[in-house]
Image 1 (cartoon, rainbow, N blue to C red):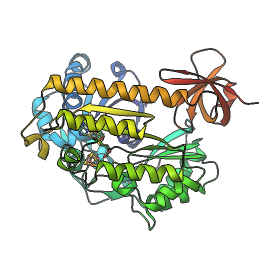
Image 2 (tube, rainbow, N blue to C red):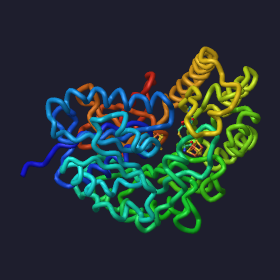
Image 3 (cartoon, helix red, strand yellow):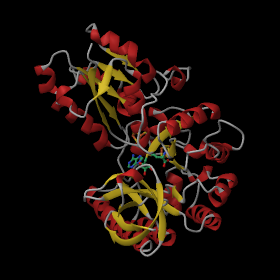
Image 4 (spheres, rainbow, N blue to C red):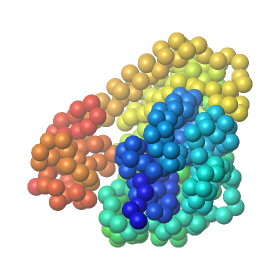
Length: 434
Ligand code: SAH
Ligand code: SF4
Ligand code: F3S
C-alpha cells in the first residue's frame, strides 16, 4: 500500500522542531509532505509562549476547513504546547480537530492514529511516568543533512513569573547519557557533523555526574562529530565545569544563547529570575575569560508589568555593556495561569511598541558590529547546501553566522577555513582559504 502523507507545521522553539521529526518517525505508514493539500493527516505542533503564537493556531485550523470538506478522511491533529495547555477545549472550540496530543505523550501517537481512523476523537495530555524516547521507534538510518538537533533535557522548574513552559512541559527531566550518546552516534552515521543539544534549560541537564560539561565531553569523543552546541541555557545553571569546557573543548562552539530578559534588578526580581544584572555581567566576564571570542545572544522582554522608563533604560545599558551578537526581543504577553498575568501595572501597548523598537534598533546595531568585526578574519564553515548563486555554497561559521562562498557542492557536510570578505544584513560572504 502506498504510504499515507503527513504534513506537519511547526511553531515555536527548536524543541518543537525536534519533536516534529520524532512524531513523523513515530507514525508508521506515513511519509512527510510539504503540501498540506495532499496530506492524509495534518499535525500542527504548536507553541503557547505568547498570545499571538497560540491564537495563530486557531486561525490556521480555520484555514484547514476547506481541505477537510474536500477530503473528509483527512485527519487533523494538534500537538505541542497549546495542546498541553488547552487539551479537550481544542476539540470543543474546533470540531474539525480529530486528535490532541501533548509534548510528553506523543510516543502514543500510533495508537491514537488507529483510534481516529475508526472515527473517534483522541486526547492525550498526560505527563506519563515512562520515558517517551524509550517508547519511540528507533531513529531511521537514512542519510541526512550535516546538522541536527538532539533533545537531552525537557521541562523547567524555574517558574519565571511570565512563562508557561513549566506548565506545558512539566518538571525538569534529563535523558540518560548513554541514550543520548547512542542517538548522537546514529546521527553521525547518517551524515551529521554538528549537533545542537536541546533543553528548555539545557544546562540544568543532570543525566550523569558532572552535568552538561560531562555530556559535552562524552560526545566530543565521538569520531566524525565535529561540532557541539547547546541551547537554551539559564544563567544560574552555568557552572564552572561548563565555562571551563568553553575554554578547552575544541568541538564546543564559541556561541552561547544566555537569556537575561531585563537589565533592571527590580524587574528581574519580579520576574523571579533569581539573579541580578550584576550577577549576569560577572558571569559573562567569566565566560569571556575562558573563551574570549565567544558570541553571546539573549532574549529580552519589554513591558513586563510595572516596568518603568528608567528600568527599561537599564536593559539598554546592559545590552551596551555586554555587546550581543544577536538577540530576540518580545513584548510582554500575559499568559493564563502565570503569576505575572495577575499583576497590576500592565504596560500600555504603545509604550511597549516604543520600547521594543528602541531595543531592537540597538540589538540590530550590535549584530551589524559583530558581523563587521568578522570581515578580514578566517573562520570555519560547515557547508550545508548550494546557495542562491550558481557555484555558491552556504553554511554556518563557528559563531553561527550564515556564510556563503564559492565552493564545489562536494563540500556539503565538510568544514573548511573561509576568509570573510563582506557583511550583509543577515549573512557574511567569504572565500575558501586555499
Ligand atoms: N527556557 C528558555 C526559553 C523560554 S521561551 C529560557 O529560559 O530562556 C523563549 C523566550 O520567550 C524567553 O526567553 C522569553 O524572552 C520569551 N517569553 C517567555 N514568556 C513570555 C511572555 N509571557 N511574553 C513575552 N515573551 C515571553
Ligand atoms: Fe520559562 Fe524561565 Fe523556564 Fe525559561 S527558565 S522556560 S523563561 S520559566
Ligand atoms: Fe513554545 Fe512550548 Fe517551545 S511554549 S517556545 S513550543 S516549549
